[in-house]
Length: 147
Image (cartoon, helix red, strand yellow):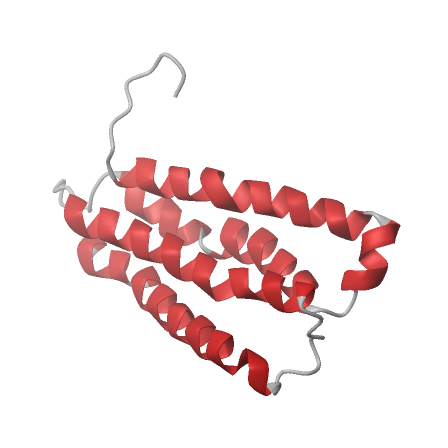
């Protein structure tokens, strides 16, 4: 983006969503898991779950969606709907982060991955589940404007 023309279209929203939050969180959580002093404390917690999903799902699981949306258009040489593309990128970004960001807080508060039925965390579990449903529905939104 340095010395370039920044155009806020669908590809820019997808790439900004990846590079603004996911990459720093992937690297920071990986540092904590790589250091023995902190890995002892976060082992078997939701911290590992959040790190795994930020690395694998954000980078690899959403790749087909990101690759199909900025491709430029459909087979009949018509462009995709820019508004739906931006909406999809924003909902995927917000839904994904609201799904897995609470996992980091659960780990800080001492919730182990095997103990999911703690009443204090019920509101965050419900919020995380609702965010996952929004994220999943927005993942299929490009099928509507690319087909």
